[in-house]
Structure formats: C-alpha cells, structure tokens
Image (cartoon, rainbow over all chains, first blue to last red; front, side, top):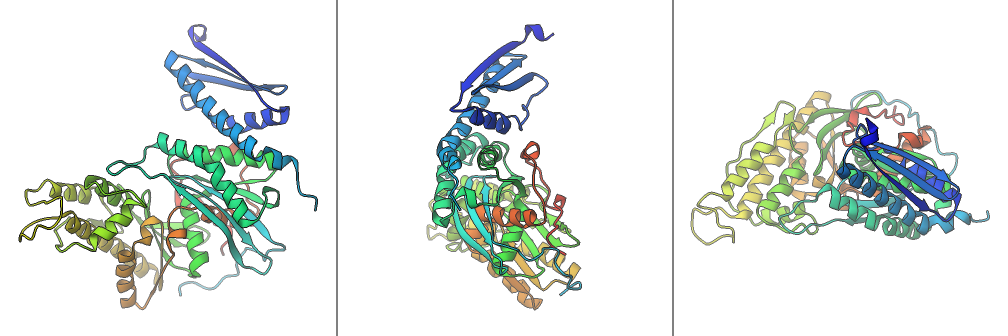
Length: 92
Length: 363
C-alpha cells in the first residue's frame, strides 16, 4: 500500500554531531499529528540530520516537511544563540 | 482556618536553587528566573514578558501566536538571564508549560526548553499552567489556605486545596470569563493594547446604565456563552449608539454594555467563590489569572469577603497575567520534591486538568 505514497527526504547539516543529535532528540519527541497517514523517521549521520517522510497525499508531504523545517529553524536559532555559551562553562 | 496544620513535606533548601520558567500557552511569551535561597526565601530575579497584540476586532490564532513566540522567545530568555545576572550553567532546572493552552504555541516553547536542556544538561520540569498561577499567587500574597478563583482568557475555575490536590469546586461550563470579555471587546472594536480586558474595564467606568443580562450560575458552576450572545444582541438593538452617549434618554452605549457585562459576570464569579468558601469554611480568597487584575472584580470580591469576615488576596499584573516566573516557581517546588520530566514525556497537551497534578510539596 505504501508503494504509492509520496516521500520527502531532508538532509540538514549541523555545526557538529552533538548539535545534530540535539536537534534529533528535541524534534522527535512530538509525534506527527496525523501519524496514520504520515510516517516519519529521523536519523543522524555524522553531523547531518536526515528526516524521511512518507505520506498518503502530496498536501501531507508539504505540511509535514514544512512543519519539520520550521522546528529545525527554531532549534538552529536556539543553538546559535546559546551554543557558544554552552561550550564555555564558567570555571568555578 | 480549616484543617490541622501539617508539617510541609518540602524540606528546607540545603543550598540556593535557581529555576528558569518558560511560558507560552496563550499570546504572552514569558521567561522568569526564580531563586529559592537556603534561608527559605523565594526571590524573583527576573520576569520578562512579550505579548502578541492583534489589531482591534481580531483575536489571536494558534499559528500566528506560535510564530510570535518563535520570533520573540530567544530574546526574552536572553533578557531574562541578563537581568537576573545569571548564566544558563547556574540554573538547576528548566521549567516549561506542559499545558493547558494552545497547541502550536505550547509546542514552540517546549522545543526551546528541550534544546536548552540538552545543550546545558539541565533537567526539564513540565508544569501545569493553572498550578503555576496558584503557586505564584500563594508565594506573593502569603495566603495560607485560600479558595482560589482562577480567572483568565482560557480558564475559569474555583479551586481549593485538599490532600495534595488542587480540587476544582466550580468552573465555567462553556467559555472562560476572559474569553467572554475579550470576544465582547472584539464585537465593539476595542483596542487589544495592552489587553482587551483592561480596555473593557476602563470603558465600564464610563457606563451609566445597568442593562439586563442573563445571570447564569448553575450550582457551583457558571455558563457564559449565553451572556455573550445577549450582550452582542444589545449591539444590534435600535437604541444602540456605537459612538457613545448622545444625551438622549433611552440609548445604549458600548460603555453601558461593558459596565453591565462586568457587573453581571463578576457577580456570578463572586457567588460561586462564596459557595466554595461556605462549603469548606474558608476565610481567604486568592484571585489569580489575567482577569484577576481587574480592580472592579477585586472590589466586588472584597465586599463579599468583608461580609464573611474573610480576606481577599490578589497580585498585580506582573504576576496575574501569564508570566514565566510562575512556571519557574511551581516547577522549582516540584523539582525540589524530586520531580523531573524525562525528555520523551515533554510533550504538550491542550487539556491538562488542575486536579491531575500531584501537589507533592504541600502537606
């Protein structure tokens, strides 16, 4: 049945493997709203975040990919703002 | 005061604790840092908030609100840390609103909380929004065991504490009182700046006529959607003058409607609060939530309380209106009792009842 589904794969490189893993762990907590018709896998390969979507309709492919990218953007901006500070703990 | 005084299970702090609280369940994006010091004091180190204000006549939709939060959250969190003079490394736990509220905005804040948690290796604490309001109200006012009237745009509940649970004595059967007021403000095209409820309060002071609106208390509960419809119907009445008083005898102005709406719904709220007080013999009322900043409501509650030799406690708009510090406070109390939310369980939920929370930090 799923042979006729649509698929989208997104590869997002991060500054480091650590950041890519953080993005994976943060985003995968929320399951897809329509998980019966949207299948999602999120993996990390080196410093690249790989998300693969398989959806029943083209519209769902657009929605799932769009929402994912918006979430990635938010995580990236957070890592950008706080990433450097996290690497430099104060010596106490 | 009802009940024996039991020893609190919350042990004294062995050191200073710091918590970051993040709130975004409605249109306010708040971040706050709370410190629980070794000597038992709870100190607000910073409390920053940015509100998504829509044009007059429009309410806030989930998608736009989520976009607003995503745009402002990092700046608000940064300002919050700077103002407190604290770095993320010194924080003990990151508290965030798990629910109730609007889905997309809640999730936006949760994503940031999770990212910070993994970056700085800090535990996450999911907090119930309503419990946040209650705990901040208790902390700021020092009320011992009050009946809590929680009134906001999203929630209207009468709550009393018993055996480690905030029990709901009465609530709205349909819409929240803040929602009723906000929607009426949209009908008469009031500005949403700083908030529609504030502008209704100001307009109500200029009202002259008390118009008849349905008074809908249902036992311990209230119903508000019928009152909203009735108020809207008045705006279609041929006596309605949108621009205000004309000097003619029999006119209905928006100010009259604001006044009548407030008097009616606030009287209903006072009644169901009084029922709960009578039920448990309480001498204290704590008003929390955005609508709690309305001075007329505080005044009416005060009249009822005085007749019962009781006291009314209320906070100002810094703590009444949704904010991050209340999430930090409730979260830190949970954290000190050993509660943490594992990453896999940091999802948000639109429906999260106040009485689902195990209030471990109280006797």
